Amino acid sequence: MIRSFIFSDGKLVGQDLEREALRLVRGDKGLLLWVDLDNPTEEETKFVLESVFQFHPLAIEDCVAPNSLPKVEDYEDYLFIVTHAVDFTRTDKFATTELDLFLGKDYLVSFHTAPLKSVQSAIDRTVKSAGVVARGPDRLAHTLLDFLVDNYSPTLDELREELEELEEHVLSEATARRSVIGEIVHVRRDFSKMRTIIRPQRDVIDRLARGDSKLIRPVMLPYFRDLRDNLARIEDTAVGYHDRLLLAFDIFLNKAQFEANEGIKFLTAITAVTIPIMVIGTWYGMNFESMPELKHGYAWALGSTAVTTLLMVIYLKKKKWF
Image 1 (cartoon, rainbow, N blue to C red):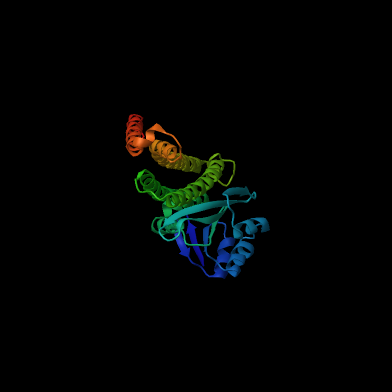
Image 2: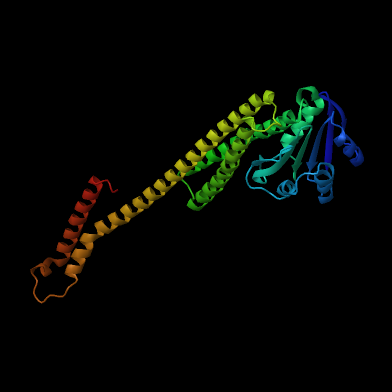
């Protein structure tokens, strides 16, 4: 689907134009154009990226093909920016969606293969208060990125809830080891994926905040720096949660080792208690021609067994093996 928004002096003057009208607007240098490609067909992608805007083939290839890491490429008259939006759903769990931006002097093109909350929020704000947002393509790009970063916080909150449930599960008495290991691996994969996205995206925003590109106006640099700081805080929070996850894993391993040691201690205690019985029974199980104890064999054997076993139990209790 192709959505388009046309602004003049910060005011929304048209939207969702026909294709030929889109070509004409693209040629008018006095207008600001935002085109959003939401899960477009191959023909729609080719029309907008190749026919209308004539982007570099490498940029189009990077846009269509999935990119695992965020990045920014400077093509002199426009910037190609790869970012990743995150979401947390009860069905798909932790999910990411790539959002690609083409930032030019008087246009912004956004490309994504799935509906994004950040894009819809930016559209709603643009339609309701265009004068605040549509002061330039860099302001539009910042609005999109700002909503995208804002959606990281609820996702982190969901991951934190998963981490807290995992910690409670690790510390509970009735803990199934296989299920805990599966939960730890699952949560660790989510946190690792989150950190893999945030750090490169922070570098992308940092490059935009430094003013290296002429397409970012000086007036917008403080806004991008604020966005970079927000990402830094989110990254620090994700690192802290990841450290808590590793600590929970260490606690789980120590708990498992402690339980194994307790089992070994119990079996060792049982073995120690039965030693007198085994020794005396083995001794009196031998056949002798002459043995003074044979006259009172059973009484002697039973008495010795009871006394030595009782002494062994008392000794193990003092050692706190019982």
